[in-house]
Amino acid sequence: MCRHVGYLGPPVRLDELLLRPSHGLLEQTWAPNDMRRGGTINVDGFGVGWYGAERVEPSRYRAAGPMWADENFAALAPEVSADSLVGAIRSATRSTSAERTACAPFQSGRWLFSHNGSVPGWPDSLAELAEKLDPVRLLASEAPVDSAAVWALLSQRLSDGQAPADAVRDTLVEVVRAVPDARMNMLLSDGNLLIATTWTHSLSVCRTDSAVVIASEPFELPAAARGHRDGSATADSPWHAVPDGHLVVADREETSLTPLPDIELRDS
Ligand code: GLN
Image 1 (tube, rainbow, N blue to C red):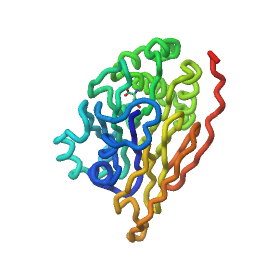
Image 2: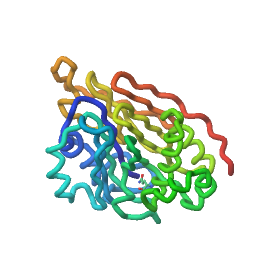
Image 3: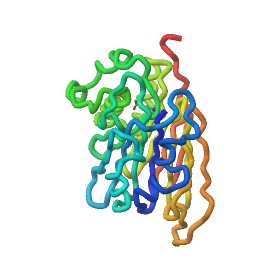
Image 4: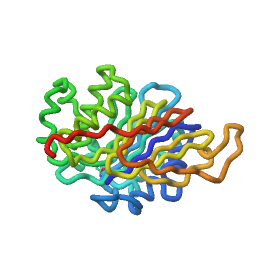
C-alpha cells in the first residue's frame, strides 16, 4: 500500500526531507518495511504538496512514474524549502487509473489529502454515498481512483464547514460502514495542522522540539527537523507507532491521539 508523510516544522528542503534520509520516502519506493496486506513497492507515481511563505494555497508536484526515476523532481527538490508539506508514493490499487492525477496529494484550496488504502468495489460500493455530493464536486473529482472519491466525500464536509478532525473521522466512518473491508489510513493538512487516521495500515509519529512528522514508516529526520528551538541539534528522533483505529491531530505545539469509534458494520 502507498506510503505518505506529513511535516510541520522549520523550513526544510524537499530533498533533505524526502530524498536523502535513510528510509525516507524515496527509499520507501523500492524498500518499504511495513506494507501489510497488498503491494510490495510504491512505483506507480508520487506527489508532494508544500506550503510556502507567499501563498495560502500549496504548490504541488505529481508524476505518474516512480520517484527514483524523476529527474525533474530530483532537480527541483534541492531548490524548494517548506515549513509544511504532504508527500506520497503510490502503489496503485487494482482497476484504478495509473495517471498523474490519481497520485496524492489531492488538493482543494489550502487542503492537501493523501489516502493509504483501498475501497474495494469502488466505484459501485460508494455510489450511495456519492449521491450526497454536490454534482459539481463530482464532476470536478480529480481522477478515476478510489482515493479521489474519498477525497470528494471529505472535501465536501470541509467546504460545508465541518471541523477538520470531525470531517476526517466522519468520512472514515461513513466509508467503512458502506464498505466494511475498506482500508482507510488518511492524511490531511492545511499547512498548520496534520490530521491522520490508522485503519489497517502502519503509521508513526515523531515530535521533536522543533517539528512534528507523521509518516507511514519512520525515517531519519534531517538535522533541521531534529533541532532544538535554540538552534542546537539532537541525535535521537523518537518515533512512536500509532495503534490501529486511531485519529491523530497535530499542530506545531501538540499531538493528540483519539480512538476512532467502534463502527457498526452494515453487512456483518
Ligand atoms: N487506492 C489508492 C490508489 O490506488 C491508494 C493505494 C495504496 O494505498 N496503495 O492510489
